[in-house]
Image 1 (cartoon, rainbow, N blue to C red):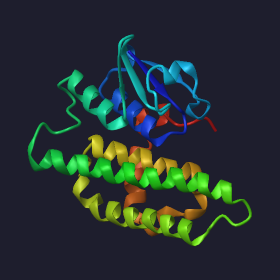
Image 2: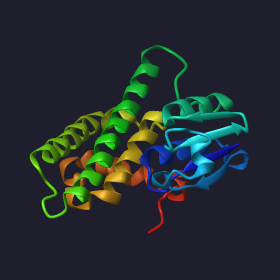
Image 3: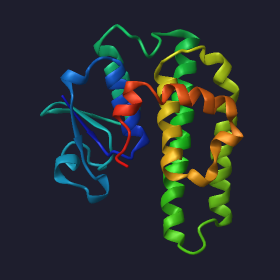
Length: 200
């Protein structure tokens, strides 16, 4: 299998981390691409030219990080990173949705700021930054529930927070979410987080 990623994408990083935590590193080749350039090797597998993409075979490709993570979790029974059913599963998937949603806002706002040049923080952009802070508040409230747990939800939280570090240093999110910052300091040391860190 081949996993197409962009090194700075929080969605690709989440998926790559999922692959590593499932012990699938020897079965998946990582291929870095620039989706903004719409390279043929990517668009032939995902017409939207988005990462991540998992090529299972020449004729079978999966895209959207949530689809790929669900597929990866099913390849091996242990460790189970998505509960099989019930409210426990729903909670984990809801956390993934929150993390991905925060990444959606963060990625879009990063590029909107670049486009606005000398006036980066328009009222619309400030509203988007408020969404990031609201998501951080919810994540902060959930830290006591993690109890050292590693699952798709916490993996997604880690990837999304790491993107804030990459693009939003001035946001100083740790000051707004100290318990989340303490938790993140631990997950950031996991080999999967270290391996998937974008180039400096």
